[in-house]
Image 1 (cartoon, rainbow, N blue to C red):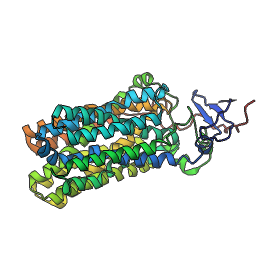
Image 2 (image 1 turned 60 degrees about the horizontal axis):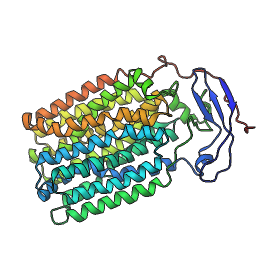
Image 3 (image 1 turned 90 degrees about the vertical axis):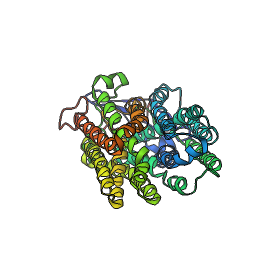
Image 4 (image 1 turned 180 degrees about the vertical axis):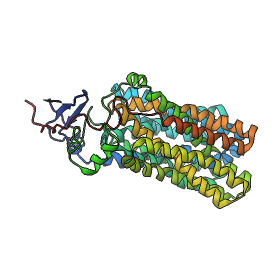
Amino acid sequence: MTADPLATNSSSTGAAHRPYREVTDTRGRVYRVGETDRDILGHSRRLMIYLPWIAMMAISVFEYAYGSAEDTLSHAHGWTQSNTFWILSVWVFFQAGIAFPAGWLREKGVLTARRAMYAGSGMCLIGFLALSHLDDVLAAILGFGVVGGIGAGLVYATCINMVGKWFPERRGARTGFVNGGFAYGSLPFIFIFNYGFDTANYHRVLDLIGCYIMVVVFGCAFFFKDPPKNWWPADLDPLTFAGDRKNAAALAKNPPAVRQYTPKEAIRTGMLPLMWLSIVMTAGVSIFGISFQVDFAKEVGFGPLVAASSMGVMAVVNGVGRGVVGWLSDRWGRKPTLVFVIVVLGLAQFGVIWAGDVRSEWLFLFFAFLSGFGGGAFYPLFAALTPDYFGENYNATNYGLAYSGKLVSGLFGGGLGSMVVGAWGYNGAYALAGGVSMAAAGIALLLRQPGRSSGEITSTTQPLPQPRPAG
């Protein structure tokens, strides 16, 4: 281990200059220690949990409430069911696809977190204005699917990476909490679209939603700021985990990456491609459930209240489940929690078939609960697992690559899913989804942290040197 005093800097908030030291462990990983979050931000880093969470709740209406608006949109614009599914599929493609280029631009210093959020807020507004006022399907796909998808993707990726960078020592619970907002934030809009949304008011409702998203995201963006490269909390020794007992326990289950992997290096480990493939399969099953659950409930003969409630249950459990599994992963370990979640998602698909066959509304709501839990909880686990494996410095790009698997999922989860339903019926489509989820769980079992042998936790037990002023 080496420790060298370096020149210090100050935050844009006017905080005083603080000493820091870069500590290098025996593997060569560098930790920047000595500065607190208040030294850099001028306030607690907890704000970097709550503001991303609020922004994520605002954009959740795009994906999780869209299915409840499809019937009205079809009647208002003269679209077919296939048209509305493909609009969502294109949105998913661009929402996930922008994560990698946006991450690359952020880490090159071209696009700051604040600017990404500002741009995203305006594009989200354009997306809902397009959905409101454009009857032509291709124009709606361009406005809502492409522009709105890129805008929501910029907000999503920036918020998730912000949490990972500011909480390198216990990111599971924090990432899960922020990620959860992307699901349960849609709950009010699910019921608005089911009960207060029709061809007489759809312009006004969609326009107001677009303005709401823009104002909330823009306001949150004003306070966004990334930590310095290699930053580590001042109150926790990165080499021995001495300090905060709870954080030390979480690190014992999920040790930090052995070094900072560039995207090319992460790909060469073989683990990033495995993550990508598992996300493709799992997210496809999740998107399928979001797209078809309300329609399946109506097809079976359940009333509109059950149909809306099932989607509401899915959204709430989807979001709350993300926070719960993030917390559990800090205690159980990221990989075992991930495999458990994906298996639950697969079993839920077969449960939905059973509930429909026996015409049981209670069973249907129960398996909607399980599907919502599994269909959202894997996202924060992958978001936390990526920097656990590859480090924080290139996390925006590395997670962008892993998350880009969702752009493929959007195609077969939504658009191609509608074709499977047409060919095999809902039971056949749900059975296929369950099988895909089980295969994804098998792939997740193959994941391992690059460069660290089984059971290895720390590389050294030397005490952390005290930082001293530079010069």
